[in-house]
Image 1 (cartoon, rainbow, N blue to C red):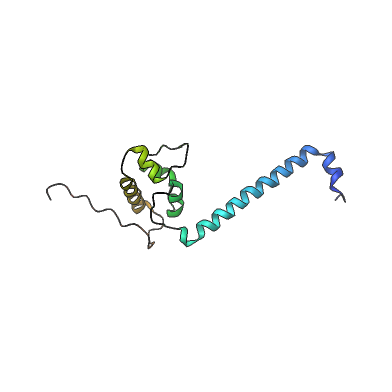
Image 2 (spheres, rainbow, N blue to C red):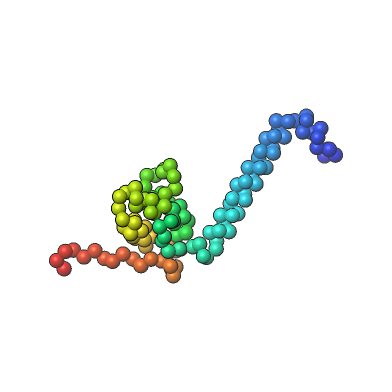
Length: 132
C-alpha cells in the first residue's frame, strides 16, 4: 500500500474520482436509510390518526400501506408532480376535506397492516339500503 495518497490520485484521477463519488453516494443513501428506519421505528410515528397535513406517502408509511393503492383510492394520479396533502387533494377534487379524510380512514380500515393498533380508525358503518 502506498505511503502517500497523492501520487496514486495523480496517476489515476478518473478512477479516484469515481471511487470518491461511489463513497459519497453510499454515505448519502446509507444515512437516509438509517434516518428513515429510526423515524418509522418510533411507535409515535406508527398508525397515527389521519390529519389534513399528512401526505399520502406519510400515511402509507405510518400504516404500512401501498402508497400507490392509497393514491388510487383517493383519486390521485399515479405519479403526481407534487406530494399532495389530504387538504390539497380535497381542494383539487372540489370536495370537502372531511370526505377525503373519511375515504382515507375507510381505506386504512380495509387494508392497514397494523390491524391491532389502538389508533386504528373504526371501520366504516355498514351501508343500509333505503327503506330499512
